[in-house]
Amino acid sequence: MAEHSTSPFQRRYPPELRERAVRMVLETSSERGERFGAVTRVAGQLGIGAESLRKWVHQAEVDGGRRTGLTTEERARMKELERENRELRRANEILKSAAAFFGAELDRRSSR
Image (tube, rainbow, N blue to C red; front, side, top):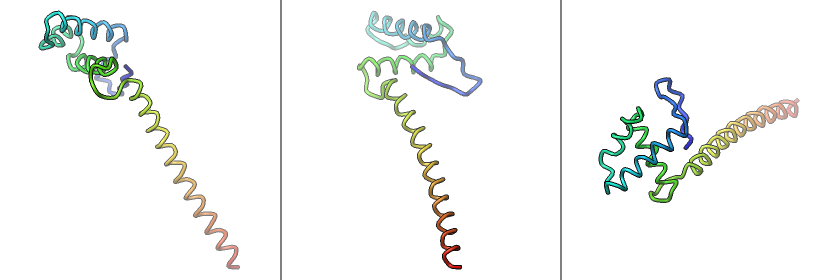
């Protein structure tokens, strides 16, 4: 679960803590037959933000095939493709500018 944040207000939690917290929520939910309150309870026990834990559980369920959505691997691939797409667009703009510049230069030389 690669979650990158640039905000100084968000804490980074070690992967082991994330995995343990998710496991605790899933175990608690299966024992009681419901999830209501499990996330909040586990988050309080471990000193984790409830919303962070809720997102981790959601992503774990997607990764495990129990919920629809993009898996962690698919999200990483999507991010990589978006970055690559931005780079290609930037390179394309540079090439267009260069082609226009050299085209104008050739026109100028041929009109002499």
